[in-house]
Length: 478
Image (tube, rainbow, N blue to C red; front, side, top):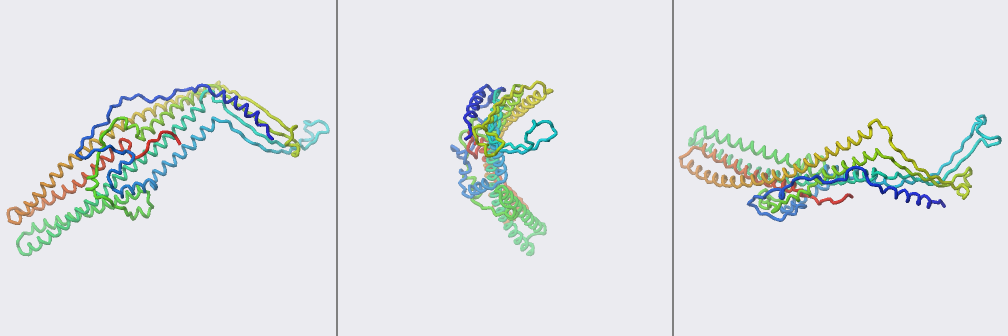
């Protein structure tokens, strides 16, 4: 039986010595002048108390929910971020392990022959000797100045930063996927509108061809009808291209296979009109809402880590103390190895004080302080960007809503104008060119109306992202 109680007692005493204060600055959150509110919601849409964690539920589209679940499982950016978390967790575990003693078990044997002519052996001594050893050895660096605790602090902060960086990716994924879905549904609506327009233009062309054959119209009216039909064909090809490109973009966001990306098959749910009808705006935007933004939390954790790195660097100015203990058995004969007479032990301490490093330690400290300055600037920039994102999203939402209302009035007016212009043309009071111009204006206005619905939906999603929606806040490391 190994006598390990002595080792435990010695290590306990050394752990007591580790209670000295850590060198370097303790972290304090930067003081920034923040407004009480991040902005004011101005909308004619309904406002609700929003569930920011699952904001997409408000659109009441099961297909959108299903696509988001698929992306959460398969998106490669998210898998990459998860891998970085696991790497940071391993590094944090490694840093924490340095604060504890390391214990090794050893079992060894040697056999050696000494030169007969070396003069090292007494007369009659055996030239060949064997030696067997069995024991435990332990070493422990006493954290006198907080070097190891600061390293642990920095590693844990970097782990939290990576966890929040994954949340940044997750929030961005939800936002991008929802906005791309809106683009797809808007493209579907525009394609249907263009198909209806093409059908109308082709019917007009057939009618004009008959009237031209009958001599009721001139060649100019016929060519104008042909031109408008061809223009509708171009518009349909463009709309089909937009839908196809958007489908492949969604397939990538969903993390599908290369074959599925080359031949995308994306489910459809609510129409763009129904999605727009279900749109709602948050009714309250206090500034502390931004505290849940994952990029702000990640930037702050990076600042905490950089601050702890300064303590690690400064601790190199001071002495380091390492304790070693060993106990076990040693015998020249293996059968006598586990024998009280073979028992041995040793205990040692090694104190090292840096005297001359040619400025190396100072350079390390200066580098750590410079990295903290960078981390501070990045944190402040993240806060600035957060308020700008909310401001821009609110402005975009308000502007798009105003444009949509105005364009609705324009569509109604153009429909009435087309009815009257067509009536005047049939009665010979206006030219066919007036009819075509009014049809063209109406088609453009209806297309713009669909795009404004998409833009407004995207702006609201941008607002949810800007205030940190789409994830559950991480309070502590894993």
